[in-house]
Amino acid sequence: MKIAGLVKPSSILLSVYLTLVPGAAAKSPKADKIKPEEVVARHLESIGTARARAAVTTRIIAGTSQVIIRTTPPGQAIGKAVLASEGVKSLFGMSFPSPVYPREQLAFNGNAFMAAFSTPGARSGLGSFLMLHDIIFKQGLMCGTLTTAWPLLDLESHHAQLEYAGTKKLNDELLYELKYLPRGNSDLKVTLFFEQETFRHVRTEYERTVSAPMGKVEYTNVQEREARYKMVEEFSLFKPEGEIMLPHIYRIMLSIDTVNGTYVAEWTIKLTQFEFNQKIDQSAFNVSAN
Image (tube, rainbow, N blue to C red):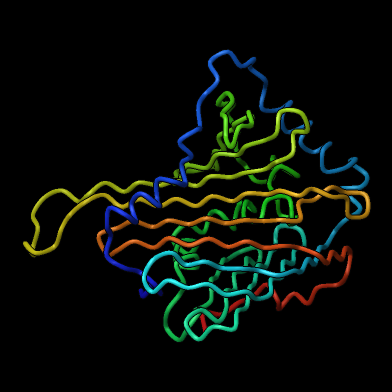
């Protein structure tokens, strides 16, 4: 599988990877323990009343997107973004005026997830990461509260568990931290963060480390070492849309560091158009690789 923009690792790139784990982040040992159920209940209230949340059955959200690729070949572009969702089905697409990264098309149709090739025969780093960790879309985690698939809207049907992990200081703000544990085995560590006063969901972290293979090495020129994957989603600029409160700035930061190379990129999506309860052609959720 090809990944566009994958380069050999370096100490400089590794330092960029480490910035996804803020140096100022610190656990608060004196934080009062709160039950996950209370965090979820207060979080749902931060979105809107039960009636307001239930009244929105479909969402189509659009805006602009900016991508910055920090690894060779580096580059940036400004384009368009669209999100669509209905129930557990969701679509996230971006388009850019770039021959090396013209599009990103990601969709879950309720049964299967697919990331389309961004160029012929090659997925982007983001598409490859999500194909490898399709549980992110299947569980409705991608895009947070922006979609109807957000699992905390109906945690029971997602068969997931939450564990309170205390508080963590990020960017000078103390946040509640919950571990998200999907049913079944998953090597992907998922952590959700919520503001203490508003209980708005402002951040999700996805982390996975794959140990270096043990045993016989067939090719002595191949360096064996662990692989590290990390994606961070951040949500900000919360404003009301109709009767629900949603973020209007959505940021994704991705770092992949494997024996094949390192990929570091970030996307900033500014959302300006929100349409609710519009009919969505179900074929939109069926994306092919090509």
